[in-house]
Image (cartoon, rainbow, N blue to C red; front, side, top):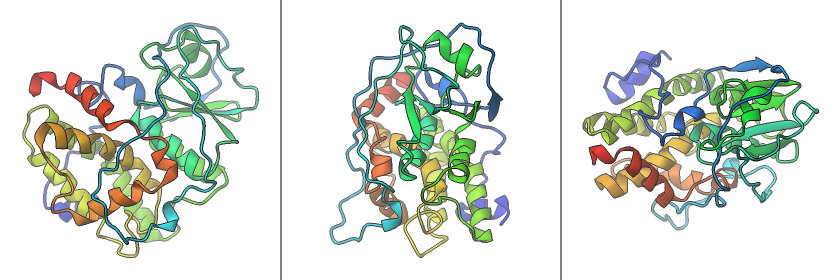
Length: 316
């Protein structure tokens, strides 16, 4: 299926996928650019030293359910966490924190608790039951330790994965890497048609975010509405399950952190219910909220709304 076919799903011309959302002026708080990783793979950096940031330990993520309750609906088995592990989250590392013993054979996932890009990889790790194999290392992006840039990841961004004496970045590449190189339930389809559709939906993620954020900037709500209509139609392609490819996959993981942030902000600030007239999206949100791998990574919606209010205060 060509990208033109995807555009036809909603009958509008989307932004070119070559215009990725990469700056704090587009969507996030001042620390946000540090969440977007453009370098997909780096060899072990030189063992010198200097530069980085961090924030006080974040509370354990918790987010109220955003979908309307639908009694009697059966939970999707495919969206449950592989191990059912309830993880105690470590505090974020700051500029005063000592570095871990990098490149000692331990696989580490460097994240920020507030970064949606890092959240993608965190969800994937959880769903595949890799908590014991991949150590979570949270970084405070507003007070990063100097050793992170110098000794771990010169791009100085999250997410980053330390594995086999190499550090890799870019969230969409990393979730594919985890799925292909570690055990646990597969999250990428074997069916050729689903693979093609998954790749097309991956390529739309930046356009989706940029379209929604345009409404936060006071540029009108039409582009945001079209973006959510696109999602609704994409969720209608495979009818044998509530997810983008029918069964839970990396595509759902790619979109979840952003819809999690957009939903409460649009509801509170603009009184827009993104699920109104979009039953597939409402069901998708409901099913995602049953996924323990995802729910353990969620943020307090009030916190998300407040961060966006500060960022877009001039447009309110």
